[in-house]
Image 1 (cartoon, rainbow, N blue to C red):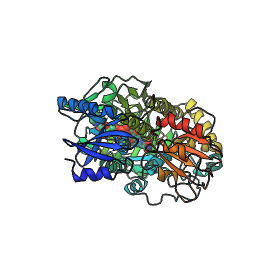
Image 2: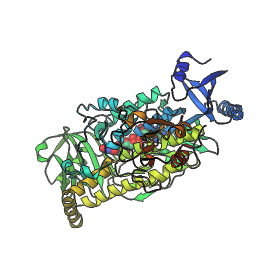
Image 3: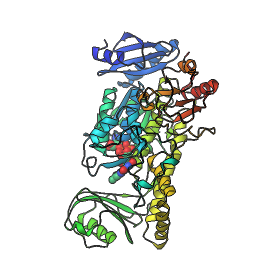
Image 4: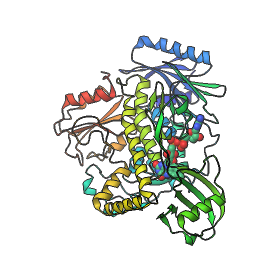
Length: 578
Ligand SMILES: Cc1cc2nc3c(=O)[nH]c(=O)nc-3n(C[C@H](O)[C@H](O)[C@H](O)COP(=O)(O)OP(=O)(O)OC[C@H]3O[C@@H](n4cnc5c(N)ncnc54)[C@H](O)[C@@H]3O)c2cc1C
């Protein structure tokens, strides 16, 4: 029998209005008019989809297959098993849960909390693009609240950015950003980055994942992966977790990456960096902020006792050892050129600028996202932002594949689109490492960079890079908005694009006076939302098709071409249902 709680979860799923029929054993068939059949199984308080079928004759074969597999293995076959409940794994889990997939997250750590995730050591800068991803899924306010941000800028006025950050430790002046050079940056509730910490990010995502029926199983360390054409199994000790897909979101030392045979290539380190929380006997000896010195760099943050430092030793410090107080003090004295004393070290870790990336993000039924797919130094604060971008890009594509309506090759566009962005981030951090080296050549480069970032064009260039607004996937065609993150377009009635994206579907915005795309958009109703009306600022366009990840798939002029719209919709969302 389907429990009342699970039934309610199903009935309230406004994306998939359906008639449902219990078939015993906790299973349920859902008939969605025009969208085929989905087979569900009860799991705790939620219903998990385990087959999305377009042809009715396939239902029972699929159920037999899944039940047979599960009974042979004694376990349920999930659509997706995600390895790692870090921010990227959790974000991806939310995306897949939102799209109706059954998702199990396996996490090594028995507990979610850690001093490395709390303020100040867990402090992370989220770019405007990442904040916008939270906004588009209705998680902006929970994120701001959990991060303790009370003064996030309002939505209606176009405002210059409040912060740009630094390049190689050289601070940028936000007043130098030329906003007129950013025509696609419209006012909206999420145009600024946010300073948060991992605990806040993970708690917001965990709560949302749980509401979406995702199960996070802790204390499970994945140690083997086996896959064939139809199934992939993650092994943890004696336990097996079968799924149709496995995604490794298990961080920079990813086990999944090695177990599934991904090639990981890149460059070796030039420096060792340290993050330290300490009691400093004489803090006045250290200047606040970033300090490039003739021997390296140190950072004294506003948080008491929280320091960062880099020493160009070729990455020689052995990460298998814990850095001692004596070692850290010696490094700090060398790079700061002071006799500063660390009386006590509370927490410390080391890192390098080793920059590596897998050559592809997919091998068969195994995919990678976040630090599992790319590692680089922390210079420029990009790793988390890159990982959230991976999760947004992958989530809807994998969900469409699981649910059976993905057009051919959709899943492979994940590597095609995200790999070049990862490669760019690696280069961005390499450029900073090269400019920070304590030698005359690098110091000459620093002089040139200081001159460039002293100009409006130079600062605007860096702002576009670090805010995520320069990202443009090559989707073909000349239209300058296509392939970019969509601006937060707004209809006259006040509806914003971001509001329309909460349920994870694509969006067709039709500004034409005769609503010419209405009929066409109906064909993709379950996968795309249609909204029409005059726009407050239409950027000279008549219509826009936005993918679930916020990327503009197609844009039409004042008299939108219906056929071109239908071609683009079919290309990204598959064959129309009607
Ligand atoms: C000091 C510091 C400052 C930083 N600042 C910024 C910043 O300001 N902005 C920014 O964008 N980025 C920043 N980064 C980088 C950012 O924190 C990472 O890129 C991001 O956390 C990666 O997330 P992830 O989910 O991919 O991996 P992780 O956060 O590493 O999560 C991986 C998860 O997988 C689990 N796991 C590992 N192996 C297994 C296994 N075999 N089985 C099951 N579970 C497993 C781990 O326990 C972990 O929970 C910073 C990093 C550091 C260290």
